Image (tube, rainbow, N blue to C red):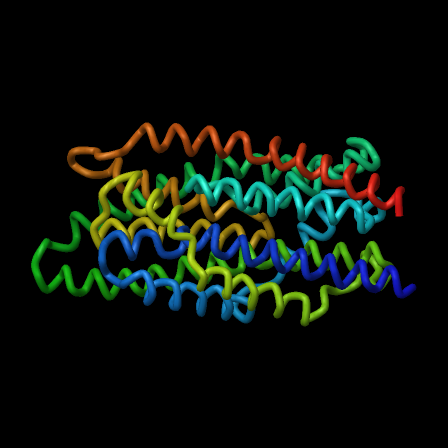
Length: 334
Protein backbone atom coordinates (compact mmCIF):
# COMPACT_ATOMS: atom_id res chain seq x y z
CA UNK A 1 0.00 0.00 0.00
CA UNK A 2 1.50 3.34 -1.07
CA UNK A 3 1.62 6.35 1.24
CA UNK A 4 -1.02 8.05 -0.93
CA UNK A 5 -3.36 5.04 -0.69
CA UNK A 6 -2.80 4.75 3.06
CA UNK A 7 -3.67 8.43 3.53
CA UNK A 8 -6.81 7.99 1.41
CA UNK A 9 -7.87 4.92 3.42
CA UNK A 10 -7.38 6.70 6.75
CA UNK A 11 -9.32 9.73 5.48
CA UNK A 12 -12.21 7.59 4.23
CA UNK A 13 -12.39 5.62 7.48
CA UNK A 14 -12.66 8.97 9.29
CA UNK A 15 -15.41 10.08 6.87
CA UNK A 16 -17.22 6.75 7.46
CA UNK A 17 -17.09 7.36 11.21
CA UNK A 18 -18.39 10.91 10.66
CA UNK A 19 -21.35 9.34 8.86
CA UNK A 20 -21.70 6.96 11.81
CA UNK A 21 -21.82 9.94 14.17
CA UNK A 22 -24.46 11.70 12.06
CA UNK A 23 -26.39 8.42 12.00
CA UNK A 24 -26.34 8.43 15.80
CA UNK A 25 -27.62 11.97 16.31
CA UNK A 26 -29.97 11.81 13.31
CA UNK A 27 -31.54 8.56 14.56
CA UNK A 28 -31.33 9.29 18.29
CA UNK A 29 -35.03 10.11 18.06
CA UNK A 30 -35.76 6.50 17.13
CA UNK A 31 -34.46 5.36 20.50
CA UNK A 32 -35.58 8.11 22.85
CA UNK A 33 -38.55 9.97 21.35
CA UNK A 34 -41.23 7.83 22.99
CA UNK A 35 -39.70 7.76 26.46
CA UNK A 36 -39.11 11.54 26.38
CA UNK A 37 -42.61 12.24 25.04
CA UNK A 38 -44.18 10.36 27.98
CA UNK A 39 -41.93 12.18 30.52
CA UNK A 40 -40.68 8.83 31.83
CA UNK A 41 -37.07 10.02 31.47
CA UNK A 42 -35.58 13.43 30.87
CA UNK A 43 -33.91 13.97 27.49
CA UNK A 44 -30.46 13.77 29.09
CA UNK A 45 -31.27 10.51 30.91
CA UNK A 46 -32.80 9.05 27.74
CA UNK A 47 -29.81 9.76 25.48
CA UNK A 48 -27.38 8.29 28.02
CA UNK A 49 -29.46 5.10 28.21
CA UNK A 50 -29.77 4.91 24.41
CA UNK A 51 -26.07 5.58 23.79
CA UNK A 52 -25.03 2.90 26.29
CA UNK A 53 -27.37 0.32 24.73
CA UNK A 54 -26.28 1.28 21.20
CA UNK A 55 -22.69 0.49 22.17
CA UNK A 56 -23.17 -2.75 24.12
CA UNK A 57 -25.29 -4.17 21.29
CA UNK A 58 -22.06 -5.22 19.57
CA UNK A 59 -21.69 -8.01 22.11
CA UNK A 60 -25.34 -9.09 21.95
CA UNK A 61 -25.91 -9.88 18.26
CA UNK A 62 -24.00 -11.46 15.37
CA UNK A 63 -22.52 -9.15 12.75
CA UNK A 64 -24.66 -10.37 9.84
CA UNK A 65 -25.82 -6.93 8.71
CA UNK A 66 -22.24 -5.71 8.31
CA UNK A 67 -21.62 -8.69 6.03
CA UNK A 68 -24.75 -7.86 4.00
CA UNK A 69 -23.62 -4.27 3.43
CA UNK A 70 -20.05 -5.36 2.67
CA UNK A 71 -20.92 -8.17 0.27
CA UNK A 72 -24.64 -8.19 -0.56
CA UNK A 73 -25.51 -4.82 -2.12
CA UNK A 74 -22.93 -4.24 -4.87
CA UNK A 75 -20.11 -6.26 -6.41
CA UNK A 76 -17.28 -5.60 -3.94
CA UNK A 77 -14.66 -6.14 -6.67
CA UNK A 78 -16.00 -3.02 -8.41
CA UNK A 79 -15.84 -0.81 -5.35
CA UNK A 80 -12.86 1.53 -5.12
CA UNK A 81 -12.04 4.46 -2.87
CA UNK A 82 -13.83 6.92 -5.16
CA UNK A 83 -17.04 4.88 -4.89
CA UNK A 84 -16.77 4.88 -1.10
CA UNK A 85 -16.18 8.64 -1.09
CA UNK A 86 -19.29 9.24 -3.20
CA UNK A 87 -21.36 6.88 -1.05
CA UNK A 88 -20.37 8.47 2.25
CA UNK A 89 -20.58 12.11 1.16
CA UNK A 90 -23.99 11.56 -0.41
CA UNK A 91 -25.33 9.91 2.75
CA UNK A 92 -23.84 12.53 5.09
CA UNK A 93 -25.25 15.36 2.98
CA UNK A 94 -28.73 13.80 3.02
CA UNK A 95 -28.57 13.15 6.79
CA UNK A 96 -27.63 16.74 7.55
CA UNK A 97 -30.31 18.23 5.28
CA UNK A 98 -33.10 16.05 6.68
CA UNK A 99 -31.91 16.57 10.26
CA UNK A 100 -31.95 20.35 9.71
CA UNK A 101 -35.58 20.30 8.60
CA UNK A 102 -36.53 17.84 11.37
CA UNK A 103 -37.58 15.05 9.01
CA UNK A 104 -37.01 11.48 10.33
CA UNK A 105 -35.66 9.75 7.23
CA UNK A 106 -33.60 6.57 7.09
CA UNK A 107 -29.81 6.81 7.46
CA UNK A 108 -29.71 3.16 6.41
CA UNK A 109 -31.37 3.86 3.10
CA UNK A 110 -29.19 6.95 2.61
CA UNK A 111 -25.97 4.93 2.86
CA UNK A 112 -27.35 2.14 0.65
CA UNK A 113 -28.62 4.62 -1.94
CA UNK A 114 -25.26 6.42 -1.92
CA UNK A 115 -23.38 3.14 -2.39
CA UNK A 116 -25.61 2.05 -5.26
CA UNK A 117 -25.46 5.47 -6.95
CA UNK A 118 -21.66 5.74 -6.81
CA UNK A 119 -21.28 2.14 -8.03
CA UNK A 120 -23.62 2.71 -10.98
CA UNK A 121 -21.75 5.90 -11.85
CA UNK A 122 -18.54 3.90 -12.07
CA UNK A 123 -19.58 0.56 -13.57
CA UNK A 124 -23.25 0.70 -14.56
CA UNK A 125 -26.27 -1.14 -13.10
CA UNK A 126 -24.81 -4.63 -13.67
CA UNK A 127 -22.51 -4.06 -10.70
CA UNK A 128 -25.52 -3.87 -8.37
CA UNK A 129 -26.63 -7.11 -6.68
CA UNK A 130 -30.32 -6.86 -7.50
CA UNK A 131 -31.49 -9.56 -5.07
CA UNK A 132 -29.86 -7.78 -2.14
CA UNK A 133 -31.21 -4.38 -3.10
CA UNK A 134 -34.73 -5.73 -3.70
CA UNK A 135 -34.75 -7.40 -0.28
CA UNK A 136 -33.78 -4.11 1.35
CA UNK A 137 -36.34 -2.22 -0.75
CA UNK A 138 -39.10 -4.66 0.25
CA UNK A 139 -38.48 -3.88 3.91
CA UNK A 140 -39.22 -0.20 3.24
CA UNK A 141 -42.83 -1.41 3.30
CA UNK A 142 -42.50 -4.47 5.54
CA UNK A 143 -40.78 -2.84 8.54
CA UNK A 144 -43.28 -0.02 9.22
CA UNK A 145 -46.28 -2.27 8.47
CA UNK A 146 -45.10 -5.00 10.85
CA UNK A 147 -44.11 -2.34 13.39
CA UNK A 148 -47.65 -0.94 13.13
CA UNK A 149 -49.29 -4.37 13.54
CA UNK A 150 -47.08 -5.48 16.45
CA UNK A 151 -47.46 -2.20 18.34
CA UNK A 152 -51.22 -2.00 17.76
CA UNK A 153 -51.62 -5.58 19.01
CA UNK A 154 -49.45 -5.01 22.07
CA UNK A 155 -51.23 -1.74 22.86
CA UNK A 156 -54.60 -3.50 22.74
CA UNK A 157 -53.33 -6.38 24.89
CA UNK A 158 -51.93 -4.01 27.53
CA UNK A 159 -55.18 -2.05 27.55
CA UNK A 160 -57.15 -5.24 28.23
CA UNK A 161 -54.76 -6.89 30.69
CA UNK A 162 -53.50 -3.96 32.79
CA UNK A 163 -56.02 -1.75 34.60
CA UNK A 164 -55.36 1.98 34.76
CA UNK A 165 -54.32 2.88 38.32
CA UNK A 166 -51.62 5.03 39.88
CA UNK A 167 -49.65 1.87 40.79
CA UNK A 168 -49.83 0.32 37.32
CA UNK A 169 -48.85 3.67 35.81
CA UNK A 170 -45.63 3.59 37.87
CA UNK A 171 -44.98 0.01 36.76
CA UNK A 172 -45.54 0.94 33.13
CA UNK A 173 -43.00 3.74 33.41
CA UNK A 174 -40.39 1.27 34.65
CA UNK A 175 -41.43 -1.13 31.91
CA UNK A 176 -40.90 1.64 29.38
CA UNK A 177 -37.31 2.12 30.55
CA UNK A 178 -36.71 -1.58 29.79
CA UNK A 179 -38.54 -1.48 26.44
CA UNK A 180 -36.62 1.66 25.44
CA UNK A 181 -33.36 -0.09 26.31
CA UNK A 182 -34.41 -3.07 24.18
CA UNK A 183 -35.20 -0.81 21.23
CA UNK A 184 -31.85 0.96 21.59
CA UNK A 185 -30.10 -2.43 21.49
CA UNK A 186 -31.89 -3.20 18.24
CA UNK A 187 -31.08 0.25 16.87
CA UNK A 188 -27.40 -0.16 17.74
CA UNK A 189 -26.96 -3.56 16.16
CA UNK A 190 -28.86 -2.66 13.00
CA UNK A 191 -27.34 0.75 12.29
CA UNK A 192 -23.75 0.59 13.56
CA UNK A 193 -23.12 -2.56 11.52
CA UNK A 194 -23.89 -0.66 8.32
CA UNK A 195 -20.90 1.61 8.93
CA UNK A 196 -18.79 -1.44 9.74
CA UNK A 197 -19.77 -2.88 6.36
CA UNK A 198 -18.72 0.33 4.59
CA UNK A 199 -15.33 0.38 6.37
CA UNK A 200 -14.90 -3.27 5.33
CA UNK A 201 -15.42 -2.18 1.71
CA UNK A 202 -12.78 0.55 2.17
CA UNK A 203 -10.28 -2.07 3.33
CA UNK A 204 -11.18 -4.40 0.44
CA UNK A 205 -10.92 -1.58 -2.11
CA UNK A 206 -7.44 -0.74 -0.83
CA UNK A 207 -6.40 -4.45 -0.98
CA UNK A 208 -5.85 -4.48 2.78
CA UNK A 209 -8.45 -7.28 2.99
CA UNK A 210 -9.85 -9.83 0.55
CA UNK A 211 -13.64 -9.86 -0.06
CA UNK A 212 -13.86 -13.24 1.71
CA UNK A 213 -12.01 -12.10 4.86
CA UNK A 214 -13.75 -11.58 8.19
CA UNK A 215 -14.54 -8.05 9.33
CA UNK A 216 -11.83 -6.96 11.80
CA UNK A 217 -12.86 -6.45 15.42
CA UNK A 218 -11.56 -2.86 15.52
CA UNK A 219 -13.90 -1.96 12.65
CA UNK A 220 -16.98 -3.17 14.51
CA UNK A 221 -15.86 -1.72 17.86
CA UNK A 222 -15.20 1.76 16.43
CA UNK A 223 -18.52 1.74 14.52
CA UNK A 224 -20.56 0.96 17.63
CA UNK A 225 -18.58 3.36 19.83
CA UNK A 226 -18.90 6.34 17.47
CA UNK A 227 -22.60 5.77 16.84
CA UNK A 228 -23.13 5.70 20.61
CA UNK A 229 -21.38 9.08 20.84
CA UNK A 230 -23.60 10.41 18.05
CA UNK A 231 -26.69 9.25 19.90
CA UNK A 232 -25.37 10.96 23.02
CA UNK A 233 -25.21 14.22 21.04
CA UNK A 234 -28.95 13.84 20.34
CA UNK A 235 -31.09 14.94 17.42
CA UNK A 236 -33.63 17.13 19.14
CA UNK A 237 -35.31 18.45 16.00
CA UNK A 238 -36.33 14.93 15.02
CA UNK A 239 -37.25 13.97 18.59
CA UNK A 240 -39.97 16.62 18.42
CA UNK A 241 -41.42 15.08 15.25
CA UNK A 242 -41.28 11.46 16.41
CA UNK A 243 -42.32 12.05 20.00
CA UNK A 244 -45.04 14.69 19.70
CA UNK A 245 -46.25 15.20 16.14
CA UNK A 246 -47.35 11.68 15.14
CA UNK A 247 -49.70 10.86 18.01
CA UNK A 248 -50.12 11.47 21.73
CA UNK A 249 -48.20 8.86 23.73
CA UNK A 250 -48.60 7.52 27.27
CA UNK A 251 -46.16 5.15 29.03
CA UNK A 252 -48.42 2.24 27.99
CA UNK A 253 -48.28 3.33 24.38
CA UNK A 254 -44.53 3.85 24.65
CA UNK A 255 -44.03 0.29 25.91
CA UNK A 256 -46.14 -1.10 23.06
CA UNK A 257 -44.34 0.96 20.40
CA UNK A 258 -40.86 0.10 21.67
CA UNK A 259 -41.55 -3.61 22.15
CA UNK A 260 -43.16 -3.84 18.71
CA UNK A 261 -40.26 -1.99 17.13
CA UNK A 262 -37.54 -3.93 18.97
CA UNK A 263 -39.14 -7.27 18.03
CA UNK A 264 -38.95 -6.22 14.37
CA UNK A 265 -35.32 -5.08 14.72
CA UNK A 266 -34.19 -8.24 16.53
CA UNK A 267 -35.78 -10.39 13.83
CA UNK A 268 -34.19 -8.42 10.99
CA UNK A 269 -30.78 -8.48 12.70
CA UNK A 270 -30.97 -12.25 13.11
CA UNK A 271 -31.77 -12.56 9.40
CA UNK A 272 -29.01 -10.13 8.38
CA UNK A 273 -31.48 -7.72 6.74
CA UNK A 274 -30.53 -4.03 7.13
CA UNK A 275 -33.84 -2.28 7.81
CA UNK A 276 -34.72 1.28 8.70
CA UNK A 277 -35.04 1.87 12.43
CA UNK A 278 -36.79 5.15 11.58
CA UNK A 279 -39.49 3.41 9.52
CA UNK A 280 -39.92 0.71 12.15
CA UNK A 281 -40.49 2.97 15.17
CA UNK A 282 -42.60 5.44 13.18
CA UNK A 283 -44.89 2.59 12.08
CA UNK A 284 -45.06 1.37 15.67
CA UNK A 285 -45.97 4.82 17.04
CA UNK A 286 -48.71 5.21 14.44
CA UNK A 287 -49.92 1.69 15.34
CA UNK A 288 -50.35 2.76 18.97
CA UNK A 289 -52.30 5.83 17.87
CA UNK A 290 -54.47 3.72 15.58
CA UNK A 291 -55.28 1.25 18.35
CA UNK A 292 -56.67 3.96 20.64
CA UNK A 293 -60.43 4.07 21.27
CA UNK A 294 -60.49 7.42 19.48
CA UNK A 295 -57.61 7.13 16.98
CA UNK A 296 -55.40 10.19 17.23
CA UNK A 297 -52.92 10.32 14.36
CA UNK A 298 -51.48 13.41 12.71
CA UNK A 299 -51.90 12.28 9.11
CA UNK A 300 -50.25 15.41 7.75
CA UNK A 301 -46.99 14.51 9.50
CA UNK A 302 -47.35 10.89 8.39
CA UNK A 303 -47.80 12.03 4.77
CA UNK A 304 -44.68 14.21 4.91
CA UNK A 305 -42.69 11.33 6.38
CA UNK A 306 -43.88 8.92 3.69
CA UNK A 307 -42.81 11.35 0.97
CA UNK A 308 -39.37 11.68 2.56
CA UNK A 309 -39.06 7.88 2.85
CA UNK A 310 -39.85 7.39 -0.83
CA UNK A 311 -37.41 10.12 -1.86
CA UNK A 312 -34.46 9.04 0.33
CA UNK A 313 -32.98 6.22 -1.78
CA UNK A 314 -33.35 8.00 -5.15
CA UNK A 315 -31.99 11.26 -3.68
CA UNK A 316 -29.00 9.63 -2.00
CA UNK A 317 -28.40 7.55 -5.15
CA UNK A 318 -28.11 10.75 -7.20
CA UNK A 319 -25.96 12.39 -4.52
CA UNK A 320 -23.66 9.37 -4.34
CA UNK A 321 -23.18 9.44 -8.11
CA UNK A 322 -22.61 13.22 -8.07
CA UNK A 323 -19.95 13.01 -5.36
CA UNK A 324 -18.24 10.16 -7.26
CA UNK A 325 -18.05 12.39 -10.34
CA UNK A 326 -16.74 15.24 -8.16
CA UNK A 327 -14.03 13.02 -6.64
CA UNK A 328 -12.92 11.69 -10.04
CA UNK A 329 -12.87 15.21 -11.47
CA UNK A 330 -10.76 16.57 -8.62
CA UNK A 331 -8.40 13.58 -8.79
CA UNK A 332 -7.96 14.15 -12.52
CA UNK A 333 -6.67 17.65 -11.84
CA UNK A 334 -4.23 16.70 -9.08
